[in-house]
Length: 272
Image 1 (cartoon, rainbow, N blue to C red):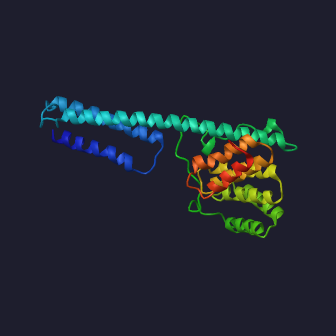
Image 2: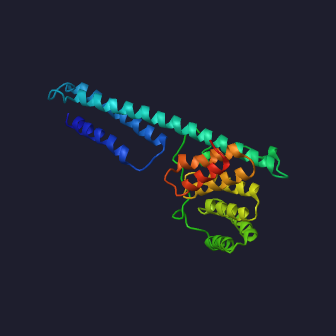
Image 3: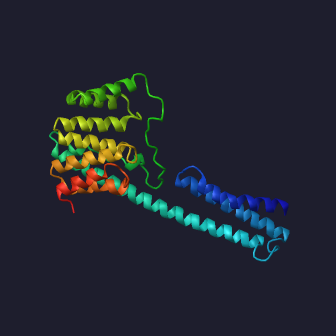
Protein backbone atom coordinates (compact mmCIF):
# COMPACT_ATOMS: atom_id res chain seq x y z
CA UNK A 1 0.00 0.00 0.00
CA UNK A 2 2.92 2.30 0.72
CA UNK A 3 4.19 1.75 -2.82
CA UNK A 4 0.73 2.41 -4.24
CA UNK A 5 0.42 5.69 -2.37
CA UNK A 6 3.80 6.84 -3.64
CA UNK A 7 2.84 6.02 -7.24
CA UNK A 8 -0.50 7.82 -6.87
CA UNK A 9 1.27 10.96 -5.66
CA UNK A 10 3.71 10.72 -8.56
CA UNK A 11 1.08 10.40 -11.28
CA UNK A 12 -1.02 13.46 -10.39
CA UNK A 13 1.83 16.05 -10.44
CA UNK A 14 2.89 14.50 -13.73
CA UNK A 15 -0.12 16.07 -15.41
CA UNK A 16 0.86 19.56 -14.29
CA UNK A 17 4.48 18.90 -15.24
CA UNK A 18 3.40 17.87 -18.73
CA UNK A 19 1.67 21.25 -19.18
CA UNK A 20 4.68 23.25 -17.99
CA UNK A 21 7.39 21.35 -19.86
CA UNK A 22 9.14 22.65 -22.95
CA UNK A 23 7.13 22.43 -26.20
CA UNK A 24 7.02 18.88 -27.60
CA UNK A 25 5.55 17.18 -30.61
CA UNK A 26 1.98 15.91 -30.39
CA UNK A 27 3.35 12.39 -30.70
CA UNK A 28 5.47 12.94 -27.57
CA UNK A 29 2.48 14.26 -25.64
CA UNK A 30 0.33 11.34 -26.77
CA UNK A 31 3.07 8.93 -25.67
CA UNK A 32 3.20 10.51 -22.23
CA UNK A 33 -0.57 10.26 -21.87
CA UNK A 34 -0.46 6.57 -22.85
CA UNK A 35 2.30 5.97 -20.30
CA UNK A 36 0.27 7.66 -17.57
CA UNK A 37 -2.76 5.57 -18.47
CA UNK A 38 -0.69 2.42 -18.03
CA UNK A 39 0.51 3.67 -14.65
CA UNK A 40 -3.08 4.25 -13.57
CA UNK A 41 -4.13 0.75 -14.60
CA UNK A 42 -1.19 -0.72 -12.72
CA UNK A 43 -2.06 1.30 -9.65
CA UNK A 44 -5.72 0.28 -9.84
CA UNK A 45 -4.70 -3.39 -9.97
CA UNK A 46 -2.37 -2.97 -7.00
CA UNK A 47 -5.00 -1.23 -4.90
CA UNK A 48 -7.57 -3.87 -5.81
CA UNK A 49 -5.22 -6.66 -4.76
CA UNK A 50 -4.49 -4.92 -1.46
CA UNK A 51 -8.18 -4.35 -0.70
CA UNK A 52 -7.58 -0.63 -0.22
CA UNK A 53 -9.39 0.66 -3.32
CA UNK A 54 -12.27 2.30 -1.42
CA UNK A 55 -10.61 2.93 1.92
CA UNK A 56 -10.00 6.51 2.97
CA UNK A 57 -11.58 9.75 4.04
CA UNK A 58 -14.98 10.37 2.43
CA UNK A 59 -14.53 12.21 -0.85
CA UNK A 60 -10.82 11.41 -1.04
CA UNK A 61 -10.56 7.64 -1.50
CA UNK A 62 -7.94 6.17 -3.83
CA UNK A 63 -10.71 5.21 -6.26
CA UNK A 64 -12.03 8.77 -6.44
CA UNK A 65 -8.53 10.12 -6.98
CA UNK A 66 -7.90 7.57 -9.71
CA UNK A 67 -11.16 8.51 -11.40
CA UNK A 68 -10.20 12.20 -11.27
CA UNK A 69 -6.81 11.49 -12.85
CA UNK A 70 -8.38 9.27 -15.52
CA UNK A 71 -10.90 12.01 -16.35
CA UNK A 72 -8.07 14.53 -16.73
CA UNK A 73 -6.19 12.15 -19.05
CA UNK A 74 -9.27 11.75 -21.22
CA UNK A 75 -9.57 15.54 -21.43
CA UNK A 76 -5.92 15.88 -22.43
CA UNK A 77 -6.26 13.14 -25.04
CA UNK A 78 -9.28 14.88 -26.56
CA UNK A 79 -7.46 18.23 -26.59
CA UNK A 80 -4.38 16.69 -28.21
CA UNK A 81 -6.45 15.15 -31.00
CA UNK A 82 -8.27 18.45 -31.55
CA UNK A 83 -4.97 20.35 -31.83
CA UNK A 84 -3.54 17.74 -34.19
CA UNK A 85 -6.56 18.03 -36.47
CA UNK A 86 -6.36 21.85 -36.51
CA UNK A 87 -2.60 21.83 -37.21
CA UNK A 88 -2.99 19.31 -40.02
CA UNK A 89 -5.77 21.39 -41.57
CA UNK A 90 -3.74 24.62 -41.36
CA UNK A 91 -0.65 22.89 -42.76
CA UNK A 92 -2.57 21.44 -45.70
CA UNK A 93 -4.36 24.69 -46.47
CA UNK A 94 -1.18 26.76 -46.25
CA UNK A 95 0.75 24.33 -48.45
CA UNK A 96 -2.00 24.37 -51.08
CA UNK A 97 -2.00 28.17 -51.11
CA UNK A 98 1.78 28.31 -51.57
CA UNK A 99 1.58 25.78 -54.37
CA UNK A 100 -1.13 27.79 -56.11
CA UNK A 101 0.92 31.00 -55.86
CA UNK A 102 4.00 29.22 -57.23
CA UNK A 103 1.94 27.87 -60.14
CA UNK A 104 0.59 31.34 -60.95
CA UNK A 105 4.08 32.86 -60.82
CA UNK A 106 5.35 30.19 -63.21
CA UNK A 107 2.55 31.04 -65.64
CA UNK A 108 3.70 34.67 -65.63
CA UNK A 109 7.44 34.00 -65.93
CA UNK A 110 9.01 33.50 -69.32
CA UNK A 111 10.67 30.14 -69.79
CA UNK A 112 9.15 28.59 -66.65
CA UNK A 113 8.12 24.97 -67.22
CA UNK A 114 5.06 24.21 -65.09
CA UNK A 115 5.71 20.50 -65.53
CA UNK A 116 9.01 20.85 -63.70
CA UNK A 117 7.56 22.50 -60.59
CA UNK A 118 6.98 19.26 -58.73
CA UNK A 119 5.17 19.02 -55.43
CA UNK A 120 5.23 22.03 -53.11
CA UNK A 121 7.09 21.18 -49.87
CA UNK A 122 4.67 21.07 -46.95
CA UNK A 123 4.46 24.25 -44.91
CA UNK A 124 7.09 24.26 -42.18
CA UNK A 125 9.06 21.46 -43.86
CA UNK A 126 6.65 18.72 -42.70
CA UNK A 127 6.15 16.12 -45.41
CA UNK A 128 3.87 13.79 -43.43
CA UNK A 129 0.94 15.83 -42.13
CA UNK A 130 -0.20 12.96 -39.91
CA UNK A 131 2.68 13.85 -37.61
CA UNK A 132 3.14 17.59 -37.22
CA UNK A 133 6.08 18.52 -34.98
CA UNK A 134 6.66 22.02 -33.72
CA UNK A 135 8.55 23.68 -36.59
CA UNK A 136 12.12 24.58 -35.80
CA UNK A 137 12.79 28.03 -37.14
CA UNK A 138 16.31 29.02 -38.25
CA UNK A 139 17.72 31.72 -36.01
CA UNK A 140 21.00 33.49 -35.62
CA UNK A 141 21.44 31.64 -32.33
CA UNK A 142 21.25 28.29 -34.11
CA UNK A 143 24.16 26.24 -35.50
CA UNK A 144 27.55 27.89 -35.92
CA UNK A 145 28.03 29.49 -39.33
CA UNK A 146 30.43 27.97 -41.83
CA UNK A 147 33.74 29.63 -42.60
CA UNK A 148 33.15 32.82 -44.62
CA UNK A 149 29.37 32.32 -44.42
CA UNK A 150 28.76 35.42 -42.32
CA UNK A 151 31.21 37.45 -44.41
CA UNK A 152 29.51 36.54 -47.70
CA UNK A 153 26.08 37.32 -46.27
CA UNK A 154 27.29 40.73 -45.06
CA UNK A 155 28.80 41.41 -48.49
CA UNK A 156 25.41 40.81 -50.09
CA UNK A 157 23.73 43.04 -47.51
CA UNK A 158 26.32 45.74 -48.19
CA UNK A 159 25.55 45.65 -51.91
CA UNK A 160 21.85 46.02 -51.14
CA UNK A 161 22.47 48.93 -48.78
CA UNK A 162 24.48 50.71 -51.45
CA UNK A 163 21.65 50.22 -54.00
CA UNK A 164 23.69 47.80 -56.09
CA UNK A 165 20.55 45.80 -56.71
CA UNK A 166 21.90 43.57 -59.48
CA UNK A 167 24.98 42.73 -57.46
CA UNK A 168 22.96 42.15 -54.28
CA UNK A 169 20.48 39.85 -56.05
CA UNK A 170 23.33 37.77 -57.48
CA UNK A 171 25.21 37.64 -54.18
CA UNK A 172 22.15 36.56 -52.20
CA UNK A 173 21.34 33.90 -54.81
CA UNK A 174 24.92 32.62 -54.66
CA UNK A 175 24.75 32.56 -50.86
CA UNK A 176 21.59 30.42 -50.82
CA UNK A 177 23.15 28.00 -53.30
CA UNK A 178 26.48 27.82 -51.46
CA UNK A 179 25.03 27.36 -47.98
CA UNK A 180 21.87 25.23 -48.18
CA UNK A 181 20.18 24.96 -44.81
CA UNK A 182 21.93 28.02 -43.44
CA UNK A 183 20.19 29.76 -40.51
CA UNK A 184 20.44 32.91 -42.63
CA UNK A 185 18.58 31.45 -45.63
CA UNK A 186 15.25 33.16 -44.91
CA UNK A 187 17.00 36.54 -44.53
CA UNK A 188 19.01 35.94 -47.70
CA UNK A 189 15.88 35.18 -49.73
CA UNK A 190 14.23 38.27 -48.26
CA UNK A 191 17.24 40.39 -49.24
CA UNK A 192 17.15 38.92 -52.73
CA UNK A 193 13.48 39.87 -52.98
CA UNK A 194 14.27 43.45 -51.95
CA UNK A 195 17.09 43.64 -54.51
CA UNK A 196 14.83 42.36 -57.29
CA UNK A 197 12.22 44.90 -56.17
CA UNK A 198 14.85 47.55 -56.75
CA UNK A 199 15.36 46.19 -60.27
CA UNK A 200 11.61 46.25 -60.95
CA UNK A 201 11.56 42.48 -61.47
CA UNK A 202 8.25 41.79 -59.72
CA UNK A 203 7.91 38.19 -60.87
CA UNK A 204 11.26 36.99 -59.51
CA UNK A 205 10.91 39.23 -56.47
CA UNK A 206 7.63 37.52 -55.62
CA UNK A 207 9.26 34.13 -55.94
CA UNK A 208 12.14 35.18 -53.66
CA UNK A 209 9.72 36.44 -51.02
CA UNK A 210 7.74 33.20 -51.32
CA UNK A 211 10.94 31.19 -50.82
CA UNK A 212 11.80 33.27 -47.76
CA UNK A 213 8.40 32.67 -46.19
CA UNK A 214 8.42 28.95 -47.04
CA UNK A 215 11.81 28.57 -45.36
CA UNK A 216 10.61 30.01 -42.04
CA UNK A 217 6.82 30.57 -42.00
CA UNK A 218 6.91 31.52 -38.31
CA UNK A 219 10.32 33.20 -38.27
CA UNK A 220 11.34 36.76 -37.51
CA UNK A 221 11.15 37.77 -41.18
CA UNK A 222 7.99 35.90 -42.21
CA UNK A 223 5.80 39.02 -42.02
CA UNK A 224 8.31 40.96 -44.16
CA UNK A 225 8.23 38.17 -46.73
CA UNK A 226 4.43 38.13 -46.83
CA UNK A 227 4.33 41.90 -47.29
CA UNK A 228 6.82 41.76 -50.16
CA UNK A 229 5.00 38.83 -51.75
CA UNK A 230 1.62 40.55 -51.47
CA UNK A 231 2.87 43.80 -52.98
CA UNK A 232 4.42 42.06 -55.94
CA UNK A 233 1.40 39.86 -56.57
CA UNK A 234 -0.61 43.08 -56.73
CA UNK A 235 1.81 44.56 -59.24
CA UNK A 236 1.50 41.41 -61.34
CA UNK A 237 -2.27 41.78 -61.42
CA UNK A 238 -2.92 38.85 -59.09
CA UNK A 239 -5.10 41.00 -56.81
CA UNK A 240 -7.16 38.23 -55.12
CA UNK A 241 -3.99 36.34 -54.18
CA UNK A 242 -2.34 39.57 -53.09
CA UNK A 243 -5.26 40.35 -50.78
CA UNK A 244 -5.19 36.89 -49.23
CA UNK A 245 -1.42 37.08 -48.72
CA UNK A 246 -1.50 40.54 -47.14
CA UNK A 247 -4.42 39.51 -44.95
CA UNK A 248 -2.31 36.65 -43.57
CA UNK A 249 -0.06 39.19 -41.84
CA UNK A 250 -2.90 40.29 -39.57
CA UNK A 251 -3.97 36.69 -39.00
CA UNK A 252 -0.56 35.18 -38.30
CA UNK A 253 1.26 38.19 -36.87
CA UNK A 254 -1.34 40.52 -35.29
CA UNK A 255 1.34 42.38 -33.31
CA UNK A 256 3.67 42.95 -36.27
CA UNK A 257 4.87 46.48 -36.92
CA UNK A 258 4.15 45.78 -40.61
CA UNK A 259 0.42 45.37 -40.06
CA UNK A 260 -0.32 49.03 -40.87
CA UNK A 261 1.69 48.75 -44.12
CA UNK A 262 -0.20 45.61 -45.09
CA UNK A 263 -3.57 47.25 -44.42
CA UNK A 264 -2.58 50.32 -46.43
CA UNK A 265 -1.55 48.09 -49.35
CA UNK A 266 -4.86 46.24 -49.13
CA UNK A 267 -6.77 49.52 -49.30
CA UNK A 268 -4.74 50.54 -52.36
CA UNK A 269 -5.59 47.25 -54.06
CA UNK A 270 -9.25 47.56 -53.10
CA UNK A 271 -9.25 44.35 -51.08
CA UNK A 272 -12.58 43.49 -49.46
